[in-house]
Length: 165
Image (cartoon, rainbow, N blue to C red; front, side, top):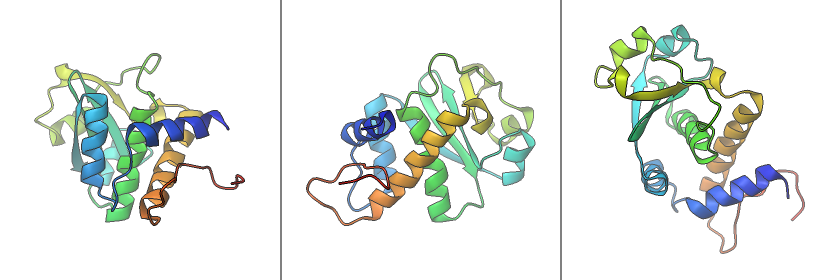
């Protein structure tokens, strides 16, 4: 088993996928597992591009909670994928140790007036995690959406595509 496979199994064991799939229920489970509330905030895609976020979402971590900011024009499935990508970073511990804090950009701060810049521990977009962590979060989002739509099986667990049974 690869270390990525092990991390997926741990994520699925720690925070099982709801059946039927429900993003809100899954976010509540992730928040309960982490002991931190998670809220969602949409902003125009141009704002994300203006602040250097190559992807369509980012993770704002404050002392007591997390905010996932994503493209307001994302469709339902695409929005789920963006949100799950950020959840992957959270569950894999990518925001801990060694990830530099990025100050909130004035453009983003203007769109998120309820977020005090002083309360932010870090703002993490795709440029802040590195290639390996980005790949892991992307695969997590892909696999979660695939497994969320499969019929429920008694002994189903995350397995990477292309691996033997």
